[in-house]
Amino acid sequence: MTAIVPALTIEHVAVHFGGLVAIADMNFVVNGGELLSLIGPNGAGKTTAFNVITGFLKPSKGEVRYRGTSLNGLKPHQVASLGLVRTFQRTSVFRAHSVFDNVLTGLHLSGRSNLLDTLLRLPRERASEQELHDAAWEILTLVGIDKQAHELAGALPYGDQRLLGVALALAAKPSMLLLDEPVSGMNASETGRFMRLLAKLRDRGMTILLVEHDMPMVMGVSDRIVVLNYGRIIAEGPPAAIREDPEVIRAYLGQAGAKRAAHA
Ligand SMILES: Nc1ncnc2c1ncn2[C@@H]1O[C@H](COP(=O)(O)OP(=O)(O)O)[C@@H](O)[C@H]1O
Ligand SMILES: [Mg+2]
Image (tube, rainbow, N blue to C red; front, top):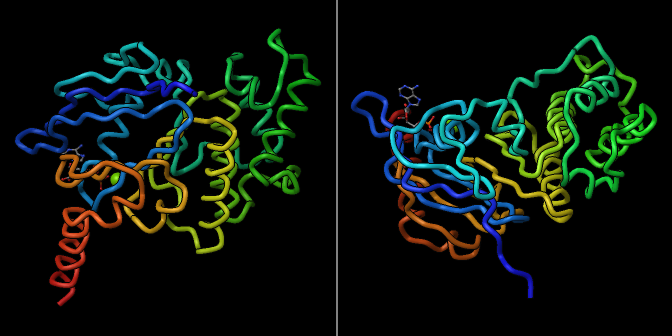
């Protein structure tokens, strides 16, 4: 029997913007090795939660802990150095450099740490240039953009740019990946490819927090789903239970109704 170990713990977190309560007393854990999706209608507080966890926003109340270490007061780069790595919407890549060089630079910039060593089966001692090259190829192959290795990062099609964003996040040696609406703007085939990559990373032991508003999208890949609405968690559980949850259905139908009204 394998013990379930909490990786990330969110405890009594609240975020107030002036009088607006963006998040009210939020509590959940992400277990080691699981893919947890945080979903909810637009304005539910997902990005706010994401920003608190990644150190971009200080909570008004409460605490976030990662493997026992409090993240309170840490800056984004300090959170990242603990192994909690996020992807960026506008991928911060060197557009005029090759895809390969971008990943290699990422590997040069990051220190050594545990999970990627396991993921890529690297030795623990300081990596040689050859090992960094090999690691870059392994990341590109894992992510599925190895054939574009010698293309300019800025010239990649949209879906591949996002995959490069994941490759760069992996080059930072994460033990947990965090993604905020990573498939927004992608077409159906790019989205399918991206979701399969997330499932593959999860299968290799990566802990993943996926923030997404589209519920059908996360059904196939999530181990568990936490649903936010107006800054409060209204449901939490495996996809099958969330899909049937009357309060979740109401929250999503409510949004569809509001959209229809706005467009009427
Ligand atoms: N910097 C901010 N200042 C004031 N209000 C904000 C700020 N960021 C978000 N909000 C508000 O907080 C609520 C939650 O927003 P957000 O976390 O972006 O939702 P989601 O990502 O789920 O769509 C919304 O009502 C939004 O308008
Ligand atoms: Mg958002």
